[in-house]
Length: 99
Image (tube, rainbow, N blue to C red; front, top):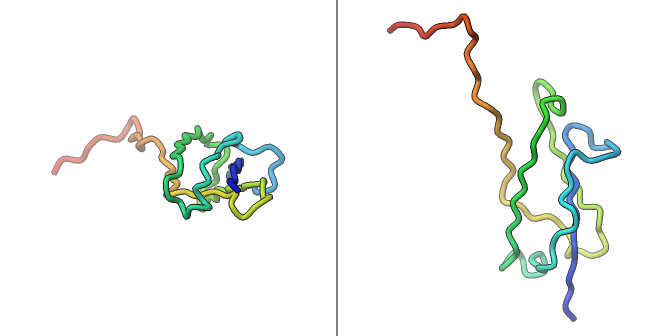
């Protein structure tokens, strides 16, 4: 029997109980990569625009949730998560120091 399983990933920043996730993938999958231990799975790349209002000074937490848990083969596999921000801009009144 061939299992074709769809998953859904919900992403929340700093509020695991937030009613509406900050981002959702929609239904994705159908490649059965978890059943094959990650071999020959489809590669999905998601870029999420993160509002500064979602972040706090200090430690931030990104919550990933996969609510479709009808089988052990429905899940999320990822290589890494990367959070990037713009480069810091020096204040207008600062000038480079002479060496």
